Each structure stands twice: as structure tokens, then as C-alpha cells.
Length: 136
Ligand code: ZN
Image (spheres, rainbow, N blue to C red):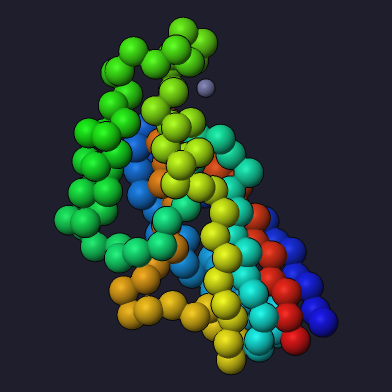
């Protein structure tokens, strides 16, 4: 079995932002030479999240609208007494910061409209993306 560990970085520019990182994970899988296995993508952060879905400008807008409506940053969150980003912790906690994908024939198995996206919830910041590929 082969294992490939990689770290990538992205700089976010806004408080809320959706960044397509599919190519980063695909790149690590290709470099690894692994044909069949799994790819783990992980954000070692408490105020960002990872989703898999369509990356199209209107739906990207809707993801953020949904988050702002359902986890309003201006609500009376207790954590906001400390650093004013409770909404980001809550969204990261419930959406999750890790995704696991099957790898087959040297590529991540994804549907036509499935992209892998980092959701910045408390930017701008530099975000680290950990990518682990295991297989044969
Ligand atoms: Zn905080």
C-alpha cells in the first residue's frame, strides 16, 4: 500500500467565501501514482468547512445565503463575547471539516457536478488543506 500526504494553502479574501479546491485534491492523487484507494481531505481549522456539490455562481451564492439565514452571525451567540465568530464555529462543527472520497483509476470518484469546496466562514485568512491519499 502507498501513502501520500500533502498540504496546500489558500488565501481567502472575504469573511464568507466559497473556494473550489477539487483540482488540489486531484493533483495530489495524480502525483501519488495511487490508482485505487481513498483520498481524505481535511481542514485543520475550527471556522471553515468542506462541502461537496455543484460549483456554479448562483448556487454558490445560495450556500452562503442559507448559512447567513440559518446561522446568523449577528445572533446573540455566547462565543461572540470572545471573538465574534460563533456562526463560523457552529457551521464548521455541523457541516464538518473532513471529507473522504473513493479513488478509482487514479482519479477521485465524483459525479459530473460534484466539486470539492472550502467554505470560508471567518475570513480573510490563510487556510491549510491536508490531503492524504492511501491505496495501491
Ligand atoms: Zn472563535
